[in-house]
Amino acid sequence: MGRALRRRVGLAATWASADPVVGLPAGRGLRGAGSLAVARRAQPETVVNPGALKPGTWPTHSPFSSPGEDLMRTDLDAFLETHNLDALLVLGPAQHNPAMTYLTGGAHLTSAVLIKPRGGEPTLFYNPMERDEAAKTGLPTRNLADFPWSQYLREADGDESLAQALRLQALLETANLTRGRLGVTGRVELGPAYSTLQALQSLLPDLEIDGKAAHDALLATRRTKSDDEIAHIRRMGQITTEVVGRVADFLSSQHGKDGLLVKADGQPVTIGEVKRLINRWLAELGAENPEGTIFAQGRDAGVPHSTGDDNAPLRLGSPIVFDIFPCEAGGGYFYDFTRTWCLGYAPDDAQALYEDVLTVHQQIMAELRPNGLCRNLQRRTCELFEAHGHPTSCRQANLQEGYVHSLGHGLGLDVHEAPWFRASETNTDRLEPGVVFTVEPGLYYPERGLGCRLEDTVWARPDGTFEVLADFPLDLVLPVKG
Image (cartoon, rainbow, N blue to C red; front, side, top):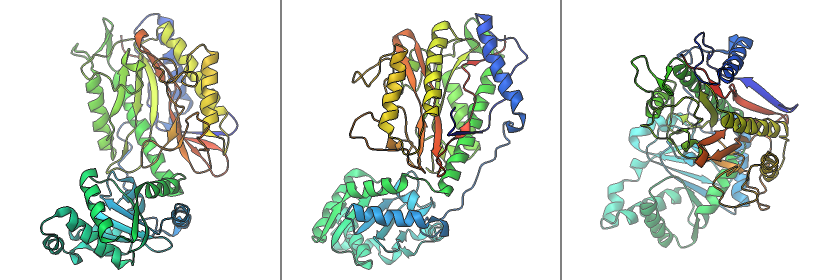
């Protein structure tokens, strides 16, 4: 995979089976089974039996209260200055709200306000029922009960947007923030928030409110990951590959009959059944699946973001794109991972497509370089696929077959974040040390019933090397019972 790439073996499944591999040609199926068996035998100590990986609990703490996160704090102030912001106002819960999660450490807060002056300490304003959760962050806190909602609602004659604005005005005044530039961010209902911020602007005419600059400043701060963040993402990788291994074991334990995968009672295994198992296993291991799962076969595998038909039975030999991107329960850090499987055997056209994708995946992994331009990696991916005779998005916009998307994306508290891999000359994103990103080349031919994608999540380490955070076999054929 190249001198600069480290692979640390994750939690792989025990895929080898003593039962005959179903499908024709028999040699193609047996070859896939053999490679999986070799992978298992080579590293038996890395295999974790289903259920052995227990849910993890992470200490709740804000980076502003953690001695090891000085750089993160310095980065945020620097980016606030770069974007000409005097302070940051973050609204909403700490669950599934990356800005609040990042600044509070993921405390269980259903509604909160955080004010962070540039160069100063943040203050977390909390609901009194959540005082213990707020205390866990280690941040300076204020109880919202000290700013009674009923008082502001009376003052606003029942206008809730104005009442919210009056309350925010009072909170900002505690930090002497009545003028300058205020960045506002957070995941809240857009309509009510828009009305509230309009009213706040009227109440504080000397305070300029800017949403885009706040968003950009936090994204820039979040781009590189601390050791603690890497630990979160690495564990999500372990959970993800454990679940993928369980899925592989489940499918391999079923039988092939009349071109379908069937259970012991003769009923076909459906895509929806597999997805329900995925969600159950993720929950058992302390993760969740807010974005859903792609488990798409045949024609659906040829449409990159088709999630698959839940009612469809699984067919032998039909390519399955399995793209799983769960996060920590409550909306923490994500992991993103894709494999393509054929059950029992791989038809020649599926095998050829897979080999082209695997070749490009391996070549790009070998060509990763510290601070390399992401756009150049996208262009290189297009070049490699074009050499194999495939159309690419570098040559044709709005392409619907061939290589139709970018090589990857950053990953963290959002499943898709910077760095980006667009081929455009305006894309200046680089693989700077500390970023976490995906490498996911793929080829798609829906009218031929073909699709293939292989995806790993990679950390650009501070020492200049690259590490796949959760390794797993790349084999195409998944053996099933006869």
